[in-house]
Length: 139
Image (cartoon, rainbow, N blue to C red; front, top):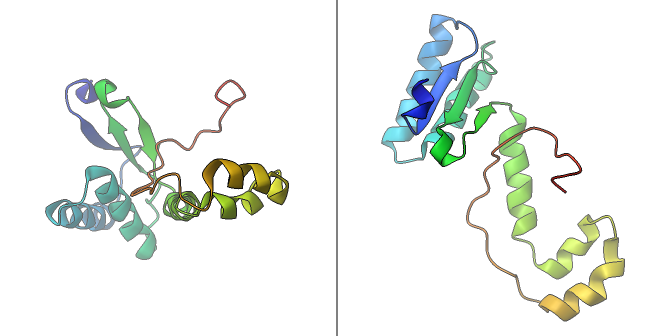
């Protein structure tokens, strides 16, 4: 299998129309040549299909080799939004995050005691690696 030897592979679940293939390719390679990473370029290629209302946006698949974690990611228009929400949440001071937890502001005193008003750390980038549901073992 090619992904055993190559770090990143983009495949298609089914055949795609020529127009969709061209739109995806142009957006993907424009992003690569502009210096973005392959995963972001993949998302931009799929987004180009969405923006042009082409039916094949869910056909491309981004895969990594086993030594990089052996992941497969199918595009969904939800991924960029999930990444934006997580990025905003993770860059919110801990004391302000309480309202977004299941315990709410009741944990504010212990969070304030532990972290103070400081961020624990700044997150530069959030990237969805998998859209599968987390099972109880992973929690």
